[in-house]
Length: 187
Length: 439
Image (cartoon, rainbow over all chains, first blue to last red):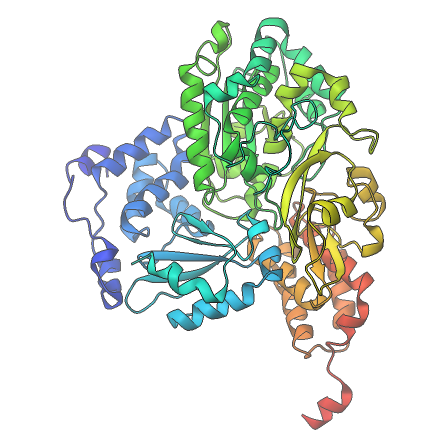
């Protein structure tokens, strides 16, 4: 699929995960993917930073994910076409990097640091508190599609352990007692 | 991040990396940075020094890599082909993929003094005559990305970046490249592979990146803290840099040391190279929290061997810590208190390494999950006779020279030292014969 083709579909049919509940996730996964024209342009722009357009593959996946919350199947081939590389290479990259989601995730993604400093300062208690509060294990999404809970490696804020991220925000000194007020900020 | 904002005003003569950091840790904009000697080193380099002079200064200063390996930066640079016959495209890459568990120094430098790194990269690129640079920044460092990109825009507008740096005839452009996770991206050659848009598998050396790196072109990869020292060396000289360690070490400069774990005041501080681990833990880190005693400590990240309380008076420098059979690594201590079971601590570490293996070579891909399983069994009291011997065998089979890169050998460091110092705790996890009969 060419860049021109993608541009002609501007603004149409973009499905946002936020509009759907968990039961609808399967439908989302099956829906045909339409790349937003702005995203195609942003990916094209990225390629100019490198000797080889392939180098933009990770950023391309992140651009798509920023809009859709995850990277739908159809995006893989379209990114491949934009960068002139095989879809299998794009999929190889997408499945290698843990911040790229190849399955739908909740509206908010909680990433709890489980590395050594946070382990020593209370990861187990924090992890248990989130699991019990949300009724999910690491790797799962709440039934209402609001939260996905994931482990993450050291976030480089070890003096504030236990540390976690919710979406783009880093929070430190997490205690089981303060997770309710924290979660309220992410509806 | 605490760069000791509560202390009296720091001086650039003694605390070059952090003296400009504001008490609220907010980033310095270009005006405030320039007002404190910012970009003075770049102007000096472009107007008064040849590229080779800059490399010689960094070599003479004995600036060793702050990413953990301690390789001399000037030596690394001097391997890059120079002159008319050198490839036209050469690259400078900053390793800002700070992901070594227990390490939180580069974040501070990038969030609070982004212009220092930008200036450092321009000076370093001038030394190797690179035309383009990338800051390979881990995807989770959202604030650092924002602050660095804003600093790059300001530097471009001021003529420090672009076709004619400082009005001279050499041009340099710089991009922030953000990653999408995976610890292995911090390995020099895996980082290059990732920057090319591929799965982050490491590459064989030689050829070294200085000869054939990014897209096969000469490439230098340096850590954030390493690079951040460069403008100060250019401005104040190699002898000044050598003197910064105040005779505490034959290594030069300052080091951003830190401590995390259950201590009273965790944080990081710029101190003379060779400061003792005891001073870092007890003076700056405030000592252990009440009721806790120090059991053991990692000198500089998850991939360094444990040291014991009796090692606290050692100078934290590359050679001294190596003599004690560990590595200084990133220089940020992780302290383990006496209430922790060492088997659980090591199980946590090996869980991390198993998950973060790139899967490229067999010993690492299969050996690390196996190691993790053995530790999990011992942690649950379900270990079998022979499990400790199996773990010891792992430390050899996954050791240096047996795997494609340093990931698995790094993973074996805390394991082998824990087995050495705390063998009894591992043995306690083996199922007792009586229990087997009862079960």
